[in-house]
Each structure stands twice: as C-alpha cells, then as structure tokens.
Image (cartoon, rainbow, N blue to C red):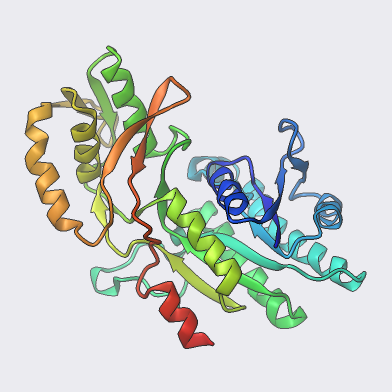
Length: 332
C-alpha cells in the first residue's frame, strides 16, 4: 500500500508516518514548501501543488492531516483558517477528482477532523455519538465541520472514497508546549533539572478525553484499511479525566515537589504547593477511575532538553463507544 500524508512534519504526522512505515507501507511525506528536505512540498491554498503531489505519490490512501490546528491561531485569523482547513480540503478533493478523471486510481481520503466539532454538550448527551449534529464554537472547529461537510458532499456527488476520523485530545512525545499536557510535562522536566519549582496552569477542572498519539495513528491506519466509505468515526478512549488528575499523574511520575500556580481567569496567580509524597492518593484514585485504560503515565526525555508525557501501551487502540472491529463487522 502506498500513502500520501499531508501535514507529515507535524506532531501527529510524524507518528503516523512512522507507524505506516513500520507496517510496510510506502509513505510519501508532504509538508509546507518552507520545510526541510525530505518532504514533498504542498500548499493547501494551491490546488496545482496538491495535484502534483498526487501525480508523484500515486497513493492508495491520502491521510489528510495538514491544517491550522491551534485555536488561538484560528481566532486571530478566521479567514485564514477557513482558507486552509475548509477550502484547502475542498481543493484536495477536487485534485483527487481531476487525478481520477485523467486516468489515475482515485485514492481513499482519510480526513482527520476533531471532536471540537461537537461543541459544548449537556451532561445527558454523553457519550458523544457520531450522529450528533456539529455545534462548532470557534473558527477552528467551524473549519473542521465545514471540511467534513465538503468531503461528504464530494463523496455523494462524485463517488469519492472518504472516511472521517473525529479525534479527541491526543498527547505524546513531540507535542508542542502550546498544548496543556505537553506544557505541564516540559515545566516538570525543567523543575526536575533544577529550575524554579513554580508550575503555571490554567483551568484544572476541565475534563478531557485523552489518547496516546500512537493509539490515534493506529486508529487512522485501521480506518484506512477497513473503515466504511462515507462514514464518520470517533477516535477516543470513551473516558473523561480532569486536567487536575492528569497533572497529578505527571507530578507523581516526575517525583519532584512543585508549587502549582493557577493563572486564574484574569491572570492573577494563586499558588498551591503540591509535595511529591502527596500525590500517591491522587494516583490511587486515578488508577481506580481509569481501570479501563491500559497503561500508566511516564515522563520521558525528548531531544535531551525536556520530557514529554508518554503512556505505556499494551496493544490497545482507543475507539469510543464501540470497538472498531465490531463496528467493521457490523458494516460488512
């Protein structure tokens, strides 16, 4: 099998390319024109570059990961995120159609959307089902919802083979410190190396569904191989955990005393000291609450400078609501 991966240089893209290569795929990695050698240059704002990538790669599957992924960036430039995430996806779909019309074998498109498209929900609406209507609350989630609609429209109108993955929060080695868990891990690494014991946090009461990025990319590969065309799949563990609990787990792994400083709603710092010995109870409660999730958290070195959160895996792919194998059997 031959894969073209857009956004190959990103956090998830790097893990996906490694997983595909390990599985025997022939992988063509596509990235922005300014990125270093080894990436096929593509620009989601330029359909010709997308068509050229298809001509060169001749893929069986296009894993479409490339996007503006940070909500702050989307808020700062909504039109820019719509152009790249939504219209860029439309340009890719059109490039696939022209590639097919010119005699190429149209590849399957595995589109990586986001659980952000669901928006805020009432407690009785959980667990979230793929059949729920999208309720985007910011330009990023709106762009992803629009891209989903574009691809499904292309699939139904022009017979494109499309599978959509709505991934929940994923974490792991190599993630940018702009994301909360990676920021916590990096701050703890600096503390462990003798830095200031102050660890800055935001809202710790928010609950998130976290997955190891390696489980996420394993799900993407599974969907490429066996997902039903024209379907949407949630990719998640199905279990929410608070940011406070995740922070406690990281502190337990780091084994250093820290002073957690809550920046608060208006940036007012409110210190709260957490001793390493005090997190044992948090760890026990977390283990009881998360018995369905394989593995524990560890802190691992990244680039010799910082540590990133790593979960030990035991062969589990986290797919919400129903195991993927059962869903595939039901559809075939």
